[in-house]
Length: 404
Image (cartoon, rainbow, N blue to C red; front, side):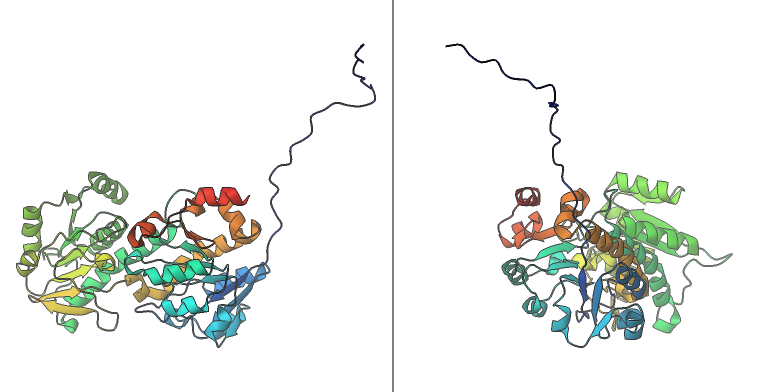
């Protein structure tokens, strides 16, 4: 049987069809809720009135609980002038699609959460409870944490800003407690011409250590820095741009330096767990009477054995005649500056969320945002939290790939 030849018509063009690419959706109008923080030592607010006015000018709704900005000296009037709706009932704020907080979610707030909400807040890994995570998972929450949120350059912008504030504040706090007004030894941080400079020991050469060193040097103090990472010590020297006295944390050298110092700053970082305790009670007992210890690492257990948590209302205690300042969340004591720093990161993030057509699309298009997501639609996507509470871990990349 003869086979028929294929018929080719000159009037048709045989071109490859274009593939349909991933077309970005249209901008989405967002509804943002800002509750008042009731947690210990928290005075910050995550969005300032200026940021709220920009968000509202871009066509979004913002609902803020009454007196939420009080700790940072922002009034309800400031927010209503910016266009926000002032709510007198916390439950009303939690009707919003996106909740923005400056403190971690509390047990009480879990009851107010609604299904499929998005939460942007800190986690405070050391204080997180299993019960909170389970309630958030039941309500299919998507949660983004301040601590792990990364920008395009791979840095953690909020953590960095808070560390800069804490580091800069350390020497102001130390100066305050060295003065006679606070029963200190009556020493001026830095000293003056003809008088040997005040001696400051900084343990930890991260961002906090760097900014504490900058401030101490600017005041004229003599600064000695300890850290077990040669890389961090080199980076700090390069950033400050001068030769500094640096050392690895060797107990005998550290003990000798602590004996003669006026101010000791604990600024060691932690890798998901507690801060290493490097200054023993014995070392503290040998320090000069009236010296000041500022333990910035107290958020994660502290690096002085004698440290115990204090509050902004009663910030210090004395042991072995050494003044200990161990307030967790030091940036909250400078709430307005801290609020502006957080707001500078979150406001562009919220506008970007809208431009991408919602949080799901933002996570899809922006790989750097993924590191900050610790829960997605009720699935736990943070490995540290899953290890700590023995809850099933799900890879976020796999989760979002299956939803496209």
